[in-house]
Amino acid sequence: MKKIIWWIVIALVIGGAGYYWYSEGKKKTVAELYITVQHGDFEVLVTTSGELLAKNFENILGPIFLPNTFSWAEYKIQDLVPEGTLVKKGDYIAEIDRSSAKNTITAQEDRIQRHEVTVETSRVDTSISLRGIRDDILNREALLEELRLKLESSSFETPATIRAIEFEIQRSERALEATRRIYDQRVRHCQIWISDLERTLAWYNKQLEMMHEVIAQFTVLAPGDGMVIYRRERNYQKRKAGSSINPSDNIVAQLPDLSVMLSRTHVNEIDISKVKVGQQVRIGVDAFPDKRFTGEITSVANIGEQLSGSDAKVFEVMVEINESDPIMRPSMTTSNQIVISAMTDVTYVSLNAIYSQDSIPFVYNTNQTKQVVLLGEANDTEIIVEQGLSAGDKVYVSVPENSASWKTTGEELIPIIKERALAKKKAEEEARKALEERRARQQPRQRGSGQGTRPDGGQRQGQGGEITR
Figure (cartoon, rainbow, N blue to C red):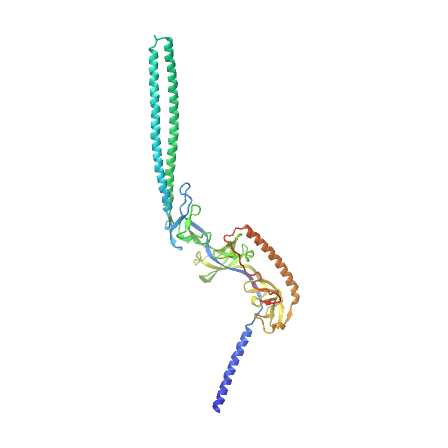
């Protein structure tokens, strides 16, 4: 009998303890279902990730392709020092593949050899041609002298014979003069011809000299002291060993000035209309979470782009960092909070406490009423309540039991809410048309459909009377 009583006592103790723990746990759960409405400072933020880069830098240039040397082509970077390498002025940076350039030089040397043969052959041909004319002149001068002697010795000849000799002398003089003119013209022509050939040969040799000057630059050296940073291509890929340069873009790498840094970030097309030059930004560096910096937006792109691997349209935003710190290095990832607006003395609550029915927002108040609320601006987690709640009010963050029978209060706010909704819809329609016009004017880098967040700050509006958060 005593054993039975003891077992009953033990069961009661265990049951009582279990009931106590259950009750306390239930109280704790219930306590966690509601939150308190806050009052104070409120910020609207756009949060993005970015990448550090130097505001100022010195380009490390590959060969400077002089005009009339190498043809326009892509030249491969054969070797490049690792990114982050500290170098001094004159240190080795990179080697550009010389194979294509060497082939061009070989072709130029062959061209020079062929032209040298042409020049020499032309000189010989000219000399032979002029020698023939000179011999002809000498022969005509001798014939003319012979006729003159014949005329002197013909004093006893008949007048007709003397007249015939004089006529022959005149004809020979005219022929000699014509031959001399031909010779002078041929000499001038040959001089111009040979001179042109020699000038062309000199130009070919000058080209070869410039080619050797250019190919000497295929070994790229540091123009100054600093840290080597790889250049970003237009697709944001790094230019490294195996990439190519060309005469119009011969930047191999860069030497950044780390005293002034920028954070390059991208904002989606839904939020870009909020972002303006001059807005303040809070910046964190992922590699050093305990470090915090401030900055200011210095530029906002007018044209959107699609980053590799994404269909979303984004706009590039540049943020200049106010502080300087040796921990900051190019290409480090940053977290950026762009302060769109900052307000003081406002009432706000968590977005988790906001529900809507037929597009009318409300909260479940702990006084067992459904309170209609007039909402203002929102950030990622909270939203301003302009009317309907006061600081210190307690509202549920999940749908309470038996809330369907609760009374709705604040219905006088519904006309204001609907009026604002119509104005917002009109503004969104105008913004949508402006965005479509801007899309039509720009040339996207990739084709795809843009994606964005809901413009209602994260709320889902119900249909047909459905209550949604």
